[in-house]
Image 1 (cartoon, rainbow, N blue to C red):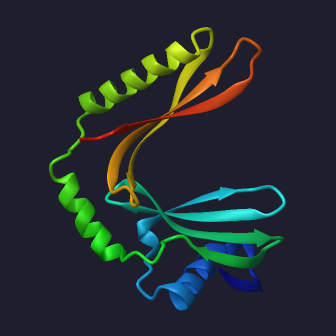
Image 2 (cartoon, one colour):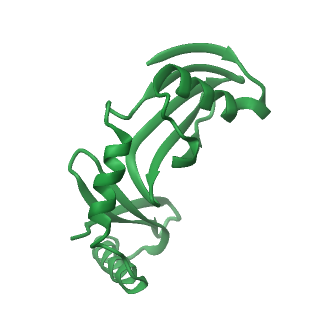
Length: 164
């Protein structure tokens, strides 16, 4: 963790975060490789999630902010070499191109399994993501399914299926 404690204007938040990561953590950091997810109420968390050729990974950076002040930056890359990881993932992806039919099959299996568990609920696909777990070195198709029960309560079920 890197303690920062620096005020920043709304217009400069992402630019300043990029500079901090590049200077303090990784000189090879390229913001183009990351998608930013912003969460939180009192404190905001800017999660920079690493995507490699459109595939989400479990690596990135988390930036904690409060009242336009960058408090801290967490390195969630576990010291892995991103360039080597890109090469490894490209080799795995060459033989695993997903067609629309493949994705549809994954989605249908996820829906069927979820219907068995929540048979009296309304189901809706929230998202479909190709995901690479760097610790397992496995590629998954992840389907997020919103479940609404008879009382109107919502939850989201994550369905992971390994891509072989």
